[in-house]
Length: 298
DNA sequence: GGGCAGGTGTAAT
DNA sequence: ATTACACCTGCC
Image (cartoon, rainbow, N blue to C red):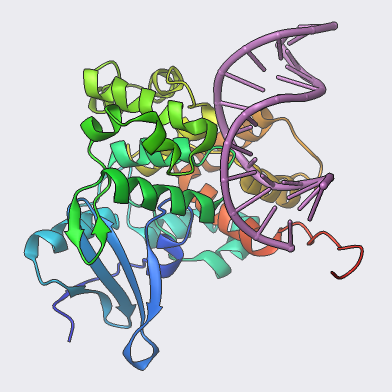
């Protein structure tokens, strides 16, 4: 029996949680084939599921967790930068290409995540793939995060990662990113990187200050701006988005990244971040490279 | 075994 | 100014 129900407001829970912006959600089949997601929001262990009535917070029935979840899903108070999802999609659908893409991706929203967690998660994401990123982050949580019960851990506190021993960090399979993670944590810990201050800067200055951190380039900076700092107008370009845009808007011709950035800004304006979510999902579903043909079976 | 995917830093032009 | 390559891990 659901303890709490959040009106979905056009949000598709699975598409949103699986859209590459968060790495700690796991899905299982519940009673009646109901798909249940388990994850962590701040210090709350959360189980959520969606049906025709809305998004249900299954356990535990803590009002605080419900508020955190509502905000996290981007279903809190609306503002000019964060319109209701159906309005966003209606605007994007005026683009002929996105109108078609949206038939597969409608309901994909932008989460409102903790900037610190997103900072570290997307440093880990560089030159990496989603299963590996997820495992590394779970190892970080297990090694440095507060215990929440049932073997689930919160994302590590700043101080814990700032003081982490290199060997323990390496054991999280971060590879060459381990020093990046520790340095970023140190900068946040000692105030050289103030994420709240960055959030208040004009977007280009915010991006530049994030890029001063070793291991953060344009793409990771844009992910932080989009997924945690509320900048729905930025357009992170990874290989998937690049493939999608080149295929759908440039007849499959390779384009320099700066061309794609200008294109996104001019074409999608303040909704570029939402457009990116849909194009990313499209590419992941439809533009995977053909599996390398193995010469012979083993 | 070896090739490949993936974003950034660095060293080369 | 752009370009080439190394970085670490996991998967095929």
